[in-house]
Every structure is written in structure tokens, then in C-alpha cells.
Length: 83
Image 1 (cartoon, rainbow, N blue to C red):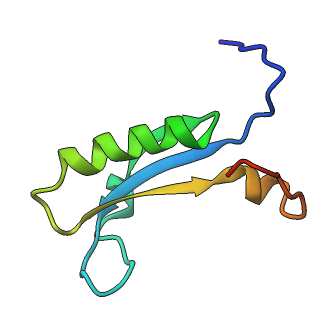
Image 2 (cartoon, rainbow, N blue to C red; image 1 turned 180 degrees about the horizontal axis):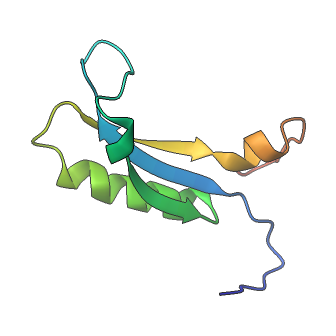
Image 3 (cartoon, rainbow, N blue to C red; image 1 turned 120 degrees about the horizontal axis):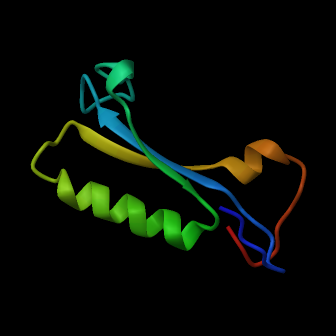
């Protein structure tokens, strides 16, 4: 699937998993991480994160995260007005 757009892609990864403790960031089982997906902008990543976080609200050890992949791919680049 190819999308053509004049807007720069700012890739974001959404993933989550069950933590061993509420006090630190250590996943219980790395083989069972939930890779939600890679999104072209922060807004769509946030919507996906919110959906997963709300769906797992009954499990206090379950956490979802947004990783700003564009910052890892181009660490020195500053994007003005966007996340």
C-alpha cells in the first residue's frame, strides 16, 4: 500500500505488554508483546494507543507506549510544529 502526500511522514510505533511490577518498566514476557502497528503521524498513533489502553484498563499491569520512530531514524533533525 502506497500513500502519496506532500506532508512528511513522522512514523510512530504503538506497542504494549504486561509489566512484572507497577514500579518499573520490565515486561513479563517479551514474546507476548502486542505490536499494534506503525502509524504515519502522532495523531493516528495516539488514537490507536488510546483504544488499546482503554480496552485493557482492567489489567493494571498492562501498558501501551508510543515510540517516536522518526526521532530514532533522524535524531538530529528538529521538526517544528509537529511531534
